[in-house]
Image 1: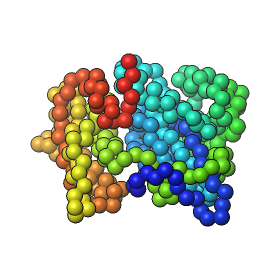
Image 2: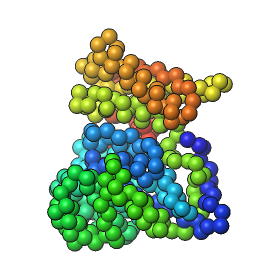
Image 3: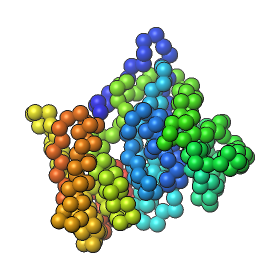
Image 4: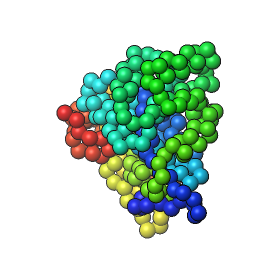
Length: 310
């Protein structure tokens, strides 16, 4: 990913448009998959596990003369732990100064209680709003229409879109609408930049994704990735040392696997993906550390990109 610059450049002879779209919703609504689909490549990690996204991440999509700044936010849910509170705070913080709020709803799951609460919170917000019914490929048409009517009455959004972020259905029309909807103004990033995440942050997220994908329900959310070292070598390669933090010895054993086989596989897949994303050779070294109560480590929150919430 390229380094951020103060301004980007839209195609010559066109009217530039650039705006911030806050992508919000309940956990597992498909927000990250949607952002990746709109950008046209992977910028946010995805797993079947709910609450995969922890921090605000901006994906940068381009449609014609418009640059769309998509803020992929953590799912909004009832927060109990400090980490939960920090994630929910990050989600609502991602809507600050938004030109448009896009509420993503898992159409198959429908209007559950947490969706009602979210709609109630959003309806009085001054920002324009659209609703995106996701996963329409696995939802009955009758249910889609019923959902659309309920949401129109409850939230009165400007538009309701029906898409499947995983198959791409409806994504082109949604992207064109967003391109027209963002205000006129100069681009904020270079044309070839797809995210505001630093390479250091991206490396930690890729490793965390592999933890979720390979361990599934075996490992709870009591885990985090701490980057101890990120060093670019003269030969163009990068050396990354990361610690996988877990809360208990039993969790450490799960991550290591038999004779360290699971950790080796996690590292191998993360290294392969990072080499493709960064377009350079990656030397990735992983260690597992038991750190009870890591959620109370203020410095770690800075490392993973979350604000400390009392």
